[in-house]
Image (cartoon, rainbow, N blue to C red; front, side):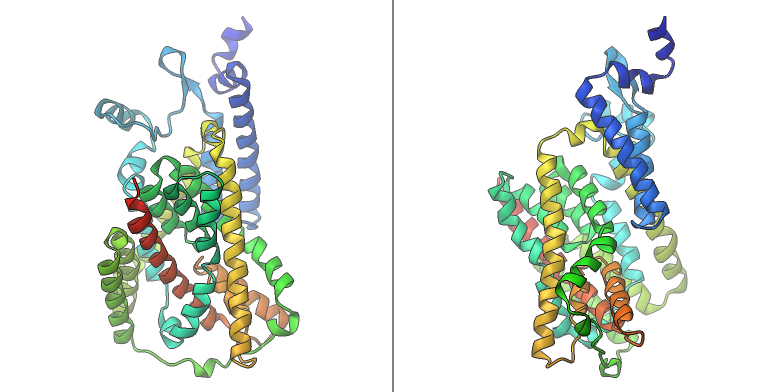
Length: 403
């Protein structure tokens, strides 16, 4: 009688009668979802991503029901559906399946986000100090480069290692696109880990700054009058030339280059209706469904894969090493400039645009209330997008050819 009663509440019923390990994983993910939602509400983590992702994780792990032949499943998304009959069935049943099939599995969602990011990105600061910005960004790729051999040493295949190493670039859409191209079977955990860890840049990088940069160096003032002015025409020309060159060198990542620099070009042409659309509804709509669908993809079976533990460790290592690399680069440039460069700009070389630039500016402001380094930090962040896209192109083109 009790069993029949509980069958009415299938989420609870499947939790009680399911495999204990799977049920435990579901409970752990439900607890994680509540934690993420709380941290998103408090704005400790980025709410734009964490709140829809947390709701997706909560609902998909609570809302497990009985399907045909006694199998357990959800009505959210079936990422492994690959036959025509399966796809058509799930498209008519699972409410996020159309978004997954038509925007995730081909990388479209990443490109849509990149168009929006390009439209809110001012590249004038990068063009004003290109050598300095690129030098910082190269140092800030430490995690992207160093984690590749470490991941291979830990037993991951080269393609999987390259996909997880891209988290060091701290560029969510780039990680999503790269993992789909390199390790499609692991793109869900890799992308979720990426977005969770990128949210941690708000919380973790300030401690790296305190640990590695003395207070007196954080207070170093930079002369904003040294920033060379650029015209809209120059910025437009730069965007389309860079897009063309990168696409010529790494065609496999051309959709990303085209998307980001299309957003930049729209901004510089000042096509008001387009700017309003791509920087508003397109960017935030794509980000919303990206986060919600990623959350709904994080079922218990995903975290029970032993490979995921390695990914968790390697993802955190990549983000930390890139932050450390950026700071070390900032300290080196401080020395080379004879004290005229604030090493905080190094953190912004990690291309979590514009988060890391704001982290750097906030630390500079705390050290010196009259300190403004944001223009230089934004230049470094834009350079980080470029260097990360180049590394992604190299990984996809070179390592992606390995059978």
